[in-house]
Amino acid sequence: MCLSASTHSKRSGPRRVPASSFSPSSRGRLTDRDRDRFQGETLFARIGRAVCRAGCLPRKELFESWETAKRVRRLFRGGRIVDLCGGHGLLAQVLLLLDSSSPAALVADTALPPSHAAVYAALADAWPRLRDRVAFVTASIEDVHLEVDDLVVSIHACGALTDRVLARAIAARARVAVVPCCQDAASCDTGRLDGWLDAATAIDVQRASRLAQARYRVWTQTIPPAITPQNRLLIGQPIERAR
Ligand SMILES: C[S@@+](CC[C@H](N)C(=O)[O-])C[C@H]1O[C@@H](n2cnc3c(N)ncnc32)[C@H](O)[C@@H]1O
Image (cartoon, rainbow, N blue to C red; front, side, top):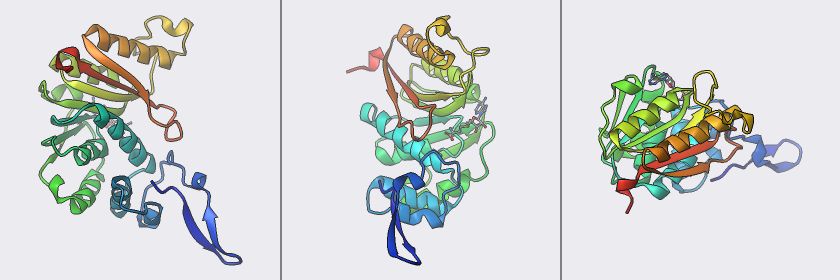
């Protein structure tokens, strides 16, 4: 990925802009002005340029989705993608691009951002195979029907929403990957571990433990903290699916 860019100083000619000047944690919208940040023909660079064309995606969502999708795809292939609390649904779309053996994706959110259509249109322009394979529904976590072959994903389902995503995946015996945020000791279970661990860590440890108790194989990973401090990635697969 190309995070650095050169610009031309009026006085001294070409100047390297330090990579840190383009922080991946920014909530600023990616626009055509950022296209040169994504040079080359890597999949990431091409996705970056496509979302710049859409002109509406918060920058950190690109980096969060990419880093999460990459890690999930190292473990899981195939299956319908179900992106709960999906927002723009970029995670679902990157997962499809990384593995075309997934037939389709469903993005569900109670308040889909209106700009989700522009992001999808820009990606489908660049990758026509995405057309007709991504559905967006205004729906709550509990309203989405899940199948055992689904891959359920969710980035930053705030607070107890992540617990509801995990509960739905467990009930369906589906594979699941979440990046929790806004852990809240009042509405989430710390397992009384918050005497030793900060409450957010205690809550995520409990979530990993809940998956294991539900007979899931569990992976605990992180995405780069430079993108978000809420960077724990919890992945689970029913043990009966393990090869
Ligand atoms: C912090 S945003 C994360 C969006 C997206 N996953 C991302 O990474 O950018 C949380 C999303 O959850 C959605 N949401 C809130 N309650 C929900 C519910 N009960 N069911 C589905 N989505 C919900 C909100 O509308 C919002 O889009």
